[in-house]
Image 1 (cartoon, rainbow, N blue to C red):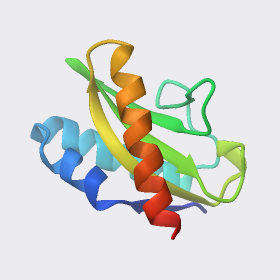
Image 2: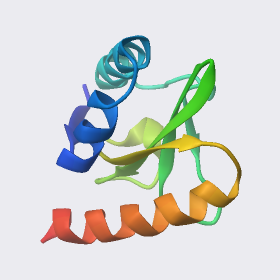
Image 3: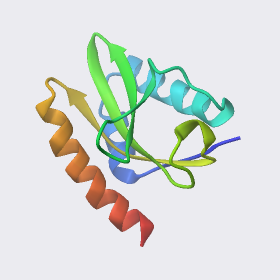
Image 4: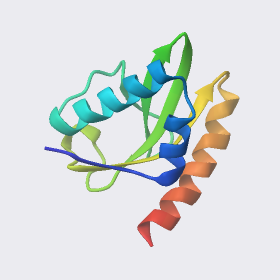
Length: 110
């Protein structure tokens, strides 16, 4: 139903997490590929950007910045790219992660 592409930066982030967190990320990524509408507890639009975030809470809060390639609405898109991840400690972390995601997306789309 939905094609999910994962950049090397994102894979490196996922692989560097505890096993429990890695398993949760991979499970939700698999579900995103199979189900059109994903619960907003897991996928949420990042306001004032064109990105979405994949949210995992496993003791701490972990995020993956995603971009819907072929549609502005995540529920309608058929291709998503997971760009990068970060460990959310405060709202300040978003700005840095979004700037990094912009650079990765620019390289990805070339």
